[in-house]
Image 1 (cartoon, rainbow, N blue to C red):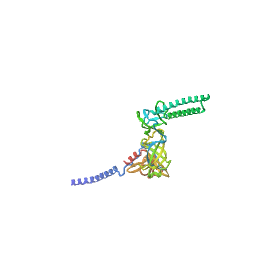
Image 2 (cartoon, rainbow, N blue to C red):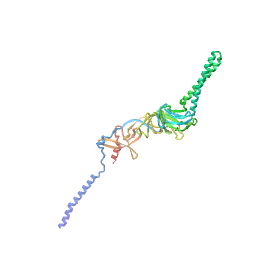
Image 3 (cartoon, rainbow, N blue to C red):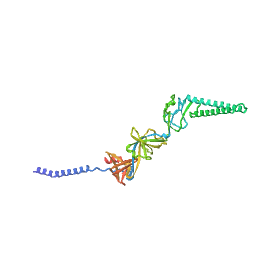
Image 4 (tube, helix red, strand yellow):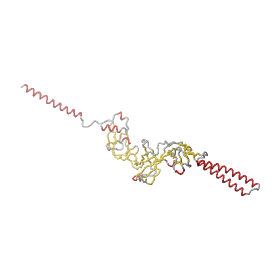
Length: 369
């Protein structure tokens, strides 16, 4: 009888106690596994470093992307051809060297130069001889021993000798004015040796037709850009362009379209346009690959943000809208165009919204995690 009572008593205390423990356990589990994660709050130390900008409207700019390459400014380029045949003896410059006008580039031993020197000597001797004959004819005419015709003939011979001497001097001057049989190749302008087709002990001939040096003043260069048929109607003379290169990704070169080549390249089916750029620091080298953005300004405005504020993930663009007190939301946006350091949006944010414009990817990852 006592045993049965004890069992009933134990059930009376244990069953409610067990139920209470189970209930507390469930509440504890609910507290430890909430349905919603705790939202990331940007710490104050990071808030001091980031940049927050206000969304605004900007004049809409449409940029047409072209490809191109740097070329020589052919208006400031000189091809040097040999004026005599001969044997090259002393090449003084190499490809890429800077030269000044009048600087000696190479020496050519030439039989033609020796012939020009000989012609000069003959012409000088002939002048001396005809001058003496003229003086003698004048003396004889004064003495009555010769006629006026003799004086006239002597005068004609002397004048022709002077003309031959002047011709010999000019020919020698054109070819360097060297009387030792050497032809000195000299630079006609300041610039860089951009092409060199001559070496020591090389024989050159006038009938070869190849230039031996090309000198270009690289203070100005051309950029030749390719325009496909679909964009030809969007390109105009004097359009502003922004040019970037692989060598200087953070540097933009500004210019204008200087010339439209109104024929299509038969191989690539593109129209060429030319941009003249100042190159005082010689940063742009011929044959460099370039990306050319032609600016087509539209009389419209669009919401614009800094390029640093834009995030691309899972085939979608996002920005981080800042709500204050360290709170930020991931907001999808639609991009209409990108130019320079600005991004033009068609939807997603409104004028006056605050967005995070630096360390955006870092904060985006923290919000996702």
